[in-house]
Amino acid sequence: MKVAIASDHGGINIRKEILQLLDEMNIDYEDLGCEGGCSVDYPDYAIPVAEKVVKGECDRGILICGTGIGMSIAANKVKGIRCALVHDVFSAKATRLHNDSNILAMGERVIGPGLAREIAKTWLETDFEGGRHENRVKKIKDYETEKL
Ligand code: RB5
Image (cartoon, rainbow, N blue to C red; front, side):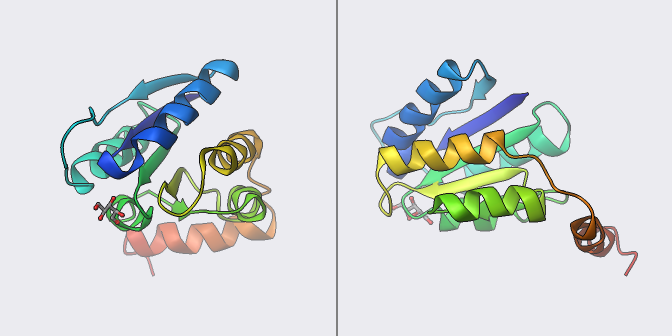
């Protein structure tokens, strides 16, 4: 698995924590920034990560900003992205099992690095359950491709 990861200035510390986790889990990644020191615009980071995922250059994405909200809104504008904004371990597992989410968004002003690490670990380790959820996800894909 290869993960594309990015944050704005509001998410740098959690991004560093998740980079460490990816190293520990031996998961390959592409770190798309941002560099620290100045204020940046979250869509400039969310959209490149989302595009890497839809183009198949990376399998999944992780995005962190202050709240996770801006990153998730921007990423979900890219066709084929199912970005889940998650701040608890239960939802991290559920959104992989049920939604087959391909991007995880978190907010550094909402949760601490320990919880963010547990959320990311759970999200990375959980597979899509398929079954009855397959058709639900397919309805989203059909809407995106104007088949509905
Ligand atoms: C930046 O101040 C902040 O707005 C951003 O990190 C994020 O929370 C937006 O949703």
